[in-house]
Length: 185
Image 1 (cartoon, rainbow, N blue to C red):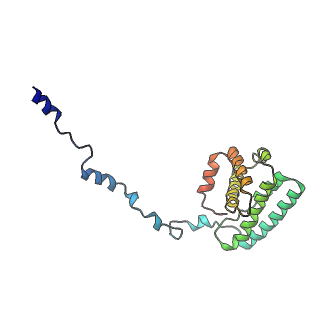
Image 2: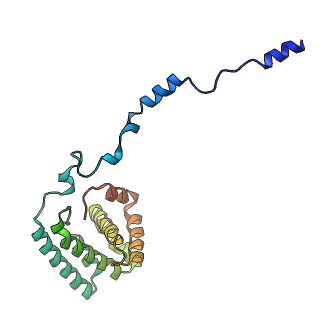
């Protein structure tokens, strides 16, 4: 009897891993793992150049409009009209695109928005942000990210505080919309 119990305990168990043939077929169905993502870049045809460089006014017109807008925003800030300055900084055509000729318009627009945000008190953000449309708040967040990318020029502490206030009003969806938008300011 003892030998019979010992034989029952020593019965070999089947292997815990599936056979090699079924494991290989599982990985064969995951063909997306075989795509070389490093070979995909901005120069590929898959990237839509129309989305990156939307049709709009020519760069010289955008540069002139941005300079005029920056002067108007500075004038409003000098008078203490922060809410109007914020609205004025976000109105008009944003300088989207990768054209190097747009660099002055991008710099002036970003500086105008950053000047408004650093002049205004963060505690008063609750009165400035709700009147803005969701698209304007998304654009404002895009300018905040652009300015925070240049810490030598702008006060990142104030911009981060504004980022928090914009997110409180617009929600996390605003961050997702800005980050997934391919258009570059």
